Every structure is written in C-alpha cells, then in structure tokens.
Length: 124
Image (cartoon, helix red, strand yellow):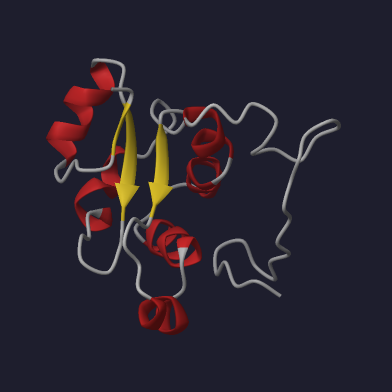
C-alpha cells in the first residue's frame, strides 16, 4: 500500500507520510477531509501529497467545482500556491506512476487549463 485517501486527521497523515506513504487529500460530496488535512501541505510534503475528489456528485461539481474547488480552498487556507498546484498536478501524476505527465515540459503529455488568476483558479 503506497497511498491513502482515507486519512482524516493531520496527525494520522503525518504518521503515514513519515512511514513513506503518499496522502491523498480527499474532498468529495460525502467524505470531506480537506479542512482537517490542509495543514500538512507544505514544502516538505507537497511531493507526497495529492488532491482527490473520490465521490464528487454532479450537482456539487456544477455548484462548487471539482479539483479547482479544492485548489481554491487550500489557497484560501494559506497554503502556498506552488505547493497546492504541485499536489494537484505533478505529485498526483508521480504518485500514480504517470511519469510523463504532471508538468508542462518537452516530451511530457499535458492537458492545459488557462486560468485568469492562480489564486482564484477559475478556468477561462
């Protein structure tokens, strides 16, 4: 077991990170762990933390967004932009073994979303 999306407290996340696990910050429609886990996302952990939605229903996506909602909320909680976007892209790809994705670079596969403002994270 290399990843965990069932972690619900920062203390539990830190323990698992210390043992080499990657933590997925889950924010779905039923399970909502972002508020409890936001504090773990920092310079030391952002390579081992990813964002996931798990069970996001279409109404919540239409009203609040998908991963973009988690990005906005983490930034609003004071997490540094580059750590949040790393967890939403490169770290997530690396954690799941997608070694040619997660960065915009020569030879890498990428889906690019244009944003008007990095902090607001609204797709143009």
